[in-house]
Length: 244
Image 1 (tube, rainbow, N blue to C red):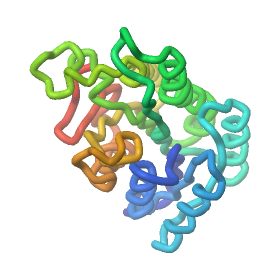
Image 2: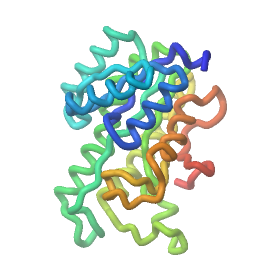
Image 3: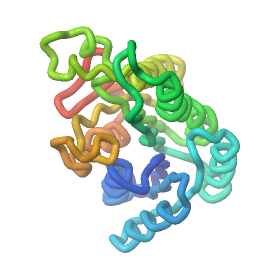
């Protein structure tokens, strides 16, 4: 734990679900965790819970679809902590009006892109100056195998029939962001990967998943704490690299 004790992490959407367990697991490794959430009451409640477990947790309020609030959050983190060692872009949504390309609501697809792709992109751009201050920072984007072109094009894959054009395409865009950012930052020491947590029981899918949030948090936490030279610019699940 000693090598992580001075690290500072921001986890977006960390007031519940996978995000809360990512924050918890990072905290048990000695990392100072900043819970990012749009709802102040829920965000502070998550911090209070983590502190009751003797973890070093703080709250910053922002909405990943609101650029002004993200800019203010970055200023707050700079004033209070000076840098970021870890950024986990966990906040994401599904939409009941999503569906197959021929039938999905266009407005739903836009909402999904706004949160699942433009949200992380905006957060990354705002937090990058803080990540550059840290020695060997880590960025983890919470993606999905549903964003894999290989999965979507393979009739033998169990997720092949999950035709959700808005969700799947927004995660595919997040995967592209991961690849391009990893290459752009390759000479900086900042490592960028995407995590595929698996089919997790969360509000996102009406708790129909077969994995717990505690299990799902293990992959992003491992990527957040990677040693130098291990993995960079990849989509990773519990078994290893997933084909783009």
